[in-house]
Length: 402
Image (tube, rainbow, N blue to C red):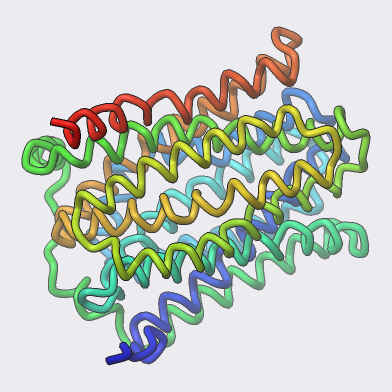
C-alpha cells in the first residue's frame, strides 16, 4: 500500500515551508558575503575571517542558546533568531568599515546559534512515525535545492542590484520564514509533550550516558567531525579555485556551490530508493560510512580539475553520496534517541561540529598566508574527511568476516 504524502501532515508542511525560505536565503548569504567582502576589503584574511566569524558564536554561546530554546520553545526561539538576522541583513549592505561588518556578521552568527538547533528540533518533531529516512531526505533536498538556486541568485542579484538593496531582500526572506512558523497554529505536537533536558552538568552527564548506551553514535560523530573540517575549508577553497586557478570572475564561484547542491538533489533520488532497504541500524550505518568515504574521495580529486566545468561536474558527483550520508545520519539519531535525548545530543554536538568547521575555515590561512599551495591545502582538508571513516569501515569489514 502506498504511503500518503508527507506534505499532508500540517506539522511537516509548516517546518518545510520555514526551512525552504531559511535555506534559500542562508545559501544566498553564503555566496553574497564573500562577494561583498572581496569587493570592499580583498580576498585575504578578511575573507577567511568573515566566514569564521559567522560560525564562532555557535561554538561560544551554544549552551545559552540551548537554554533559551528550552525556556521559550523551539518555534518562538527560531522566529526570534530569524527576525534578528533580518535586522542585521537590513544594514549589512551599507557598511563600509571592515570592523563594523565583522560585528554584524558575528551577530548573524549569534542568531544562527538559535535558529539551527531550533529548526533541527522542529524537524525531528514533525517527522511522521516510521518515515524517518524519507522525511530526512526531503528536508535535505529542500536545503540542497536552495544550494542550487540560492548562490547563483545571490551572484545575479549583486550584479543587478547594489548591496544596499540586495541584502534587505535577503532580510525579507528571513521574515517570511519566521511568519510562516509564527502565524500557523502551534508548534509540532510532539515537541510540546517532551520536557527538555536540564542545563549545566546534568546536560553533560546525560550526554555521557547517551553515548554509553548507544556506542554506534561514535561511528557517526567522529567521521562527521572530520567532514566538518573539510566542509569549512571547501568555501574558501572553491572561491580561490575559481579565482586563482581558473582565472574567472568572483561571481562564477556561486556556480560551484550550486553544482554541489545539484548533486545532492540527485542523491535524494538515490536516498529515497535506499529508504526502502535501509531500515535497521547496521545497514544504515554501513550506508553512512560508505557514502562519507565516497564523498570525501570525490571532493579530494577537485584539486586535479583542469577547468571550471569539470570541477562543477565533480561537485555534482560528490553531492550524491553526501545526501545519502546526511539522511542516514539523522535517521540513525532519530531511531536511536528519544526527542529529549536528541535535544541533548544536538545541544552538545552542534557546537562541536561548528568548532571543527571553523577549524576547517581557518586552515585557509595556510594558503592565504603563503604556507601552502592551494593543492597542498586541499589535500590536508580532504584527508580530515577521509581518514576518520577508514577505521570504522575496517572494523565492520573485519566483523563481517568473523
